Length: 103
Image (cartoon, rainbow, N blue to C red; front, side, top):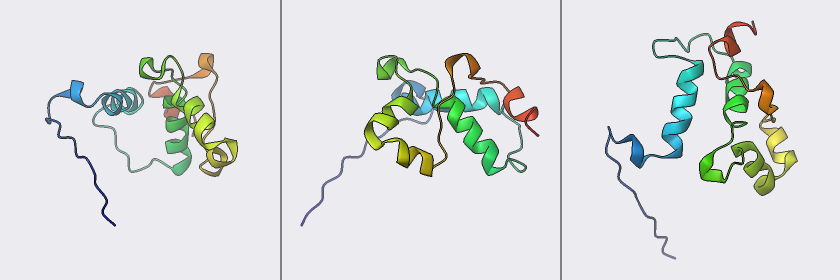
């Protein structure tokens, strides 16, 4: 049995080639600006950040959120197993205050 894979090369400083990954990184940096230490982040913090990022609609998903797409594909049980939950649109917070005020 032979398995073929396709590798896509991107240039290090060409953010336009990385699409969704670059957008997610930008959102992460909105919450955790450059220079922020990750040393004291808990799993709870990481889950909270991921849930807020994944509850933000994406143009590339026709206005859907990554959470809603994952819900359609994997189902609620799987998302619950990973402690993923939907954040209401008016509650999404992509600022450093998301983490600072939850301790």
